[in-house]
Amino acid sequence: MMSIDSLKFRVNLAGSSLSTALRTGVGITAHPAAKKPAKLLQLYEFEGCPYCRLVREVLTELDLDAMIYPCPKGGKQFRPRVGKLGGKTQFPLLVDPNTGEQMYESMDIIAYLFETYAERPLPMKWRVGLLQKISSAATGIARGTNGVRVRPSRRPDKPLQLYSFESSPFARPVRDLLCELEIPYILRSAGRTRVSDWVPPAMRDALNIQSDPDQINRKALLKRAGRVSIPYLVDPNTGEEMAEAEDIIRYLTETYATA
Image (cartoon, rainbow, N blue to C red; front, side, top):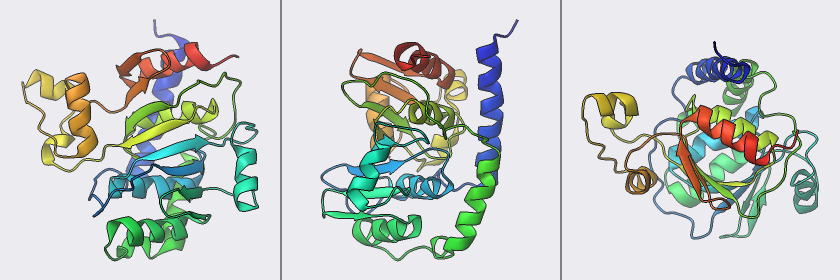
């Protein structure tokens, strides 16, 4: 018989898959930026925020990593810091230690990332900001309250690392939980760049297809784990590393949730 936790995960996964479909492929593929920031970008956000979602989609699109500071509603770890940094508690907030810039407003952040790192014109889809915001808000309906409200937890000493791309239906529930538990993590963007990246890991194994990624974090993950499977969690606090969303969620709950 299926456990309650497994049933909850499957319901969550169904909503996540619907969200991916509603965003019609945004946040999946990567067209790497011309240059990479020397220091990690810092993003204060919460997973269930439709405006934050847009910025995370562009992180995938531009193949940019970021230090994520989760700020769920009711959170006490990083949410108060946002008001001190920018003068108001509004999300998302981007802090770029490479340039000294910090800014609110998803469309301003997206324009900044393209101008500063992509060094190419802002694509037409990102010029229609209102349409993107409406679409992202509608997508959020499928997610309910996942990734919105804080849950009691203990904070790890070192930030975790998560290999993910924004619209991965399997990575999203993991990010939901990281957000709710206020666990800071380094987002290792791993968007798809090749046709072979679209083949699920289980199918690659069954057909004996060798992974040959050219995206930087996918290459690093292949070297690290022997295969490319998204999401992939690295916890330097315990030395644990794992793929498979349900296993990661179980691990995070047992290790960091306190209620």
